[in-house]
Length: 228
Length: 61
Image (cartoon, rainbow over all chains, first blue to last red; front, top):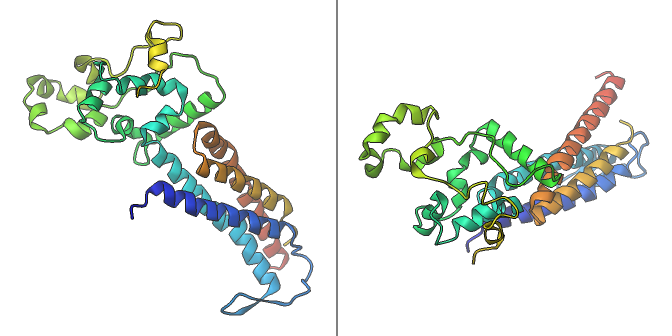
């Protein structure tokens, strides 16, 4: 049986949150300054004083389970950004995703997709700084994007304010015979590593241009339609 | 230790918001979890720890 991370997160997360709510309701109704009527509680393996049990329940409800739920949900955030559908769930990203899946498109993303150079999680492979192992700056940028998208404080076409890190390309291409065979890669290597020169300078547009992604442009309607 | 009523109520709300994000992931539930539920959990933890500290001091521990 093949169990995905999503199923594990959903089951564990649901259990933690439901249990958390139940224990919180119990904690909210407990008076810690009044001795309870029952002196002891049977927890299966031992009898513990009722007040100690209530304090343990409060600790679990307010510290242990929240820590677990926050960990799981954050894991969900950082794993969720791996999937193309995670990116496509924000409509401003649809032009990029639809263009990538368009066999007639010649953008760098579309060429990687149609030639199966990247088998899955195509967005994440080129923008891996957003993931758990990426830089703090990329995560802060991700949170800023999330805040601006959900508060609708953005304008289309969106433009990336961060500089693309060539490391994302090097992860797959550096050291391969095809990469090494190109003389200009060796010549510009230091500049590429320092991000003083970007791979796109020679390898073309990665996604549709901002003019194409501007609402009202001739390409906009096509780019916003889901490509089957 | 006195009552932990508001801490428990805030934690319940945060758990429900987290549950929504876990079951129906999307940009809006993600934003609600990130910018509301998480800070709420942090406020709850601080409130709880302050009350535990005050309780321990009262007992002279």
